[in-house]
Length: 192
Image 1 (tube, rainbow, N blue to C red):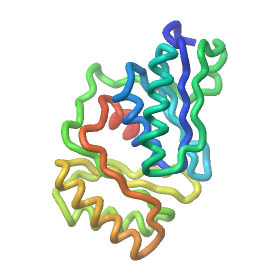
Image 2: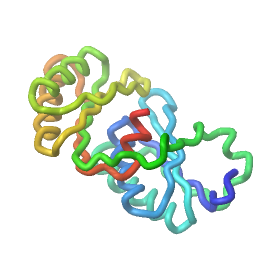
Image 3: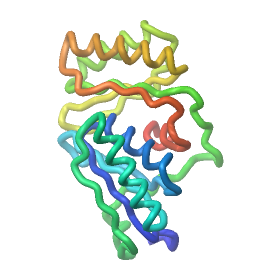
């Protein structure tokens, strides 16, 4: 265990969009460090943060509230002074590459579907609807897949709207969301 792990905060969500929103809120609300995320299966994903007990509690509370507005938060827990061996069950520790992460000063947009056909249709519609950059496709299990795009807020909003409409016409749209000015490290953490 790292000496600075005074407390470990954990949040588990159903769906990738909910997890990213919750993580963004945690990092913006408190002085905590993101240490990683993991795919549990069947659409469940978990995020882990560390810091002092009060900051971790504030961060997980903010994440649960924000994530709960757009999706399902399954579990939230804070462990003060976790045992040294806890790292054996946590995901590999996230380490920023090459010093300072380049912040995204615009927005990211996410469209999540159940099944790949709807996601490919959504991604095509997003790219055609606005000047956005397709960043990545992320699969979390349970048939849930997400495309992430970035660009200025207006373009991302138009792209996500077009992608959500396209996905719902050919398959199951699970959710769509826009995060203007994501917290430092959120994009790097989830896109690597």
